[in-house]
Length: 222
Image (tube, rainbow, N blue to C red; front, top):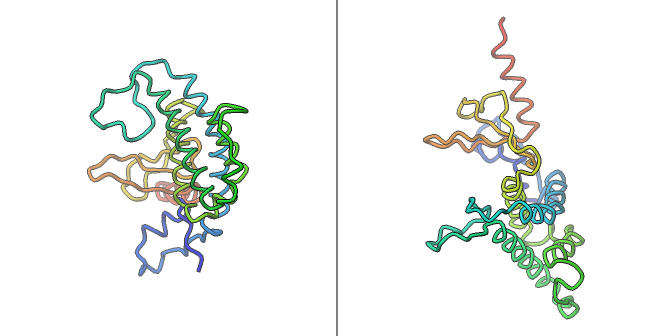
């Protein structure tokens, strides 16, 4: 049986109790992610190398907050968080290449040291991009897709790529506050109400469009 897609397309399905008659059917994965999320992940992954280069270019040596997790380890902050982020992005790409090669052991003997033809990050992301269909069908496809999205969002924010985050006019359908934002590169909207309790509502763009129309009708005079 096909499992539901792990993407934001199933946010409503996950949040509504199973016994609720208004619960929509889940969007199925094909085989893991739905076609729309597959397209998004492919696009986001293809942009990671450029975002890595932008992170290097925009890093000025100041102690700005780094994009990567795991920095709160008690060690002094790095004088170059930007370079730390790019190094971690490169190691992250290496780790997924190793994971994919583990599924194809016969390929390992033909592998050469990354960095002979281009920068190691560029080579590795290019190698993975050519095999993205296999990555999105692998046993680890859900984790891979989530991490691609995390890196894309983090680097887009750190480099201020695009125009950033846009607040929407309609209030959040869950908490009622005007704290719904759309972030460039994402296919969903997220509520940023910090609470307490924090609202973690997420809507796809189609869900928001329907909700915005409904909200507009409720405020119109009879």
